[in-house]
Length: 154
Image 1 (spheres, rainbow, N blue to C red):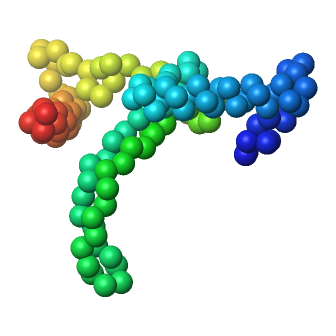
Image 2 (cartoon, rainbow, N blue to C red; image 1 turned 180 degrees about the vertical axis):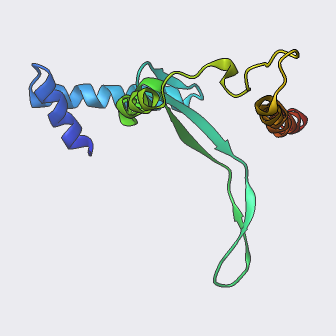
């Protein structure tokens, strides 16, 4: 969308004629430009933030000759979209997520470990079930290592 298309959109969305829409768009752009030029940031709730950025002077290279070229310091503008704008642009597929949860069924906290067997009743079947808690404990060890590594990175 260019400026004249924006003027047309403002004209269609409001009861203003083309000349008034054009002056309204010009007024908004001039106000934004003047505030950013003064070094302040402009925040528009639900849309985003325009913030001035400064780049220091540096030495670059001419790619054809390899000669050093001085690049002057400059000021630019950075736009950060608001969370509401991001949400409109990237909707979350909630239907797929809930369908996956329904298919998996409810998950209980202690479902990974085997049920405890009383010490008085030991049979051949309980001996086969005994390694399951050890396997669950072994599976927990890599998770503990991962959390230890992530805490070291911080």
